[in-house]
Length: 505
Image (cartoon, rainbow, N blue to C red; front, side, top):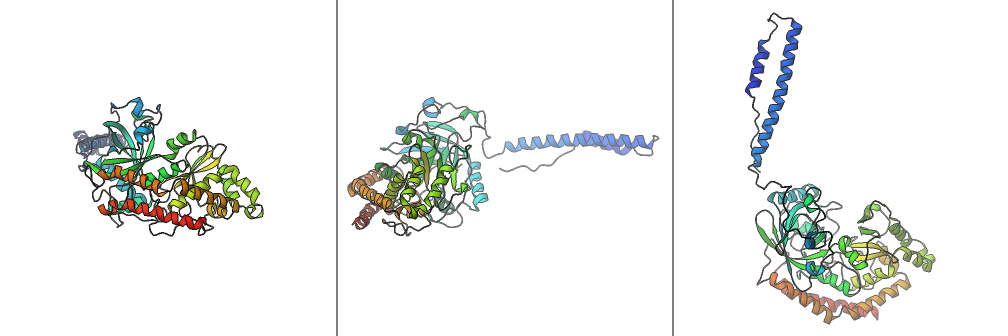
């Protein structure tokens, strides 16, 4: 916004007071103390008039500059004509068929003001010293530890449209670590983000408890590092096929107006947020503690176990006890007692099943290599239960040293793997889950069908003819990389199964 320079002026009344002030001198035939009193009174009156004048001028200044603002002024009294109980209200159950269809690609449009996009850029610069489009990077992103630490980008209020219906003042913020960092520095507009539908309800009472067909929050994954654009979705599908509760996912065409018109930002995978609806839907309730950790489980630190509910209770005894027992000397002195104590608070059997599936299909960007991308839910009668998150790096290694199927290369720095696998009883359970997964789920026939179905669903909106992802709005290295991606996934399944056969012999 171009602002007019502010130059305060003196009304005639001020000049008159100056004249009177200057004519009252000690030469007038009045007592000197009276003259001083009169001059002091006039000076005080002059200061009051001057202050009032400045406020008046500043008010006119702000009014004048509002006229030349490059954005529409914020309207807190806007109407919500599209609001309906079935689509916007908190008092409706999550509509999975509409929001997470498995047989079509949905479309969503997001509109922000130019100043909102400028705010996002300034926020990233201030918090993370990162300027959009400057500093290198590549569409493929980078790996490693958390780039942004515990900080998160701020929200801006946007308009969201779906099937011709508008949702109002929806909170929009960027999310992610390495994939966001690489995309941001490379100037790629296909950025990972999260939507919060009632984030701004305190500012705009009209949207109190606003939901998107029963969902409060939704996460949008752009497929960074994935030339197939389907890994986030099929990774979640595979976990659920094998009996591991995981967020629902669906494909979306995403159009974003960054202040200069709608731009096609390509195919995203919408992901259900674990602590919003997923736990209630798949566990039947969510009264137990929900954590989103950043921990290796070597020791307990409150800062590494972000609570997503029950914050006021400030009770971490479930996870504290788990970590204490996990690293206890009982593991070697009395294994049976150690297992019994560990299973009191931690769902060990479920974790071993997840570990078998995750290692077999190869999903490196989680526990065992990175201390993130999982949730824990304290399920009644079962204990802390492992929930996968962020599967966009599944079924690829990106040149990293990954955990072997036998887990022989898992270090003591990851005790939840090393200590369990060193126990003969738990190792046998793990091995049985590896066998079960490769026999019943991770077969060439089932995986080929899954990959081809999802690839064919999104292809018309990636390489045409209906839409085409374009440079600066895509992470694809090339059209051929996308076309050949299914073959690469199919070969990966064959390779992993060969490793499993050698391990099970």
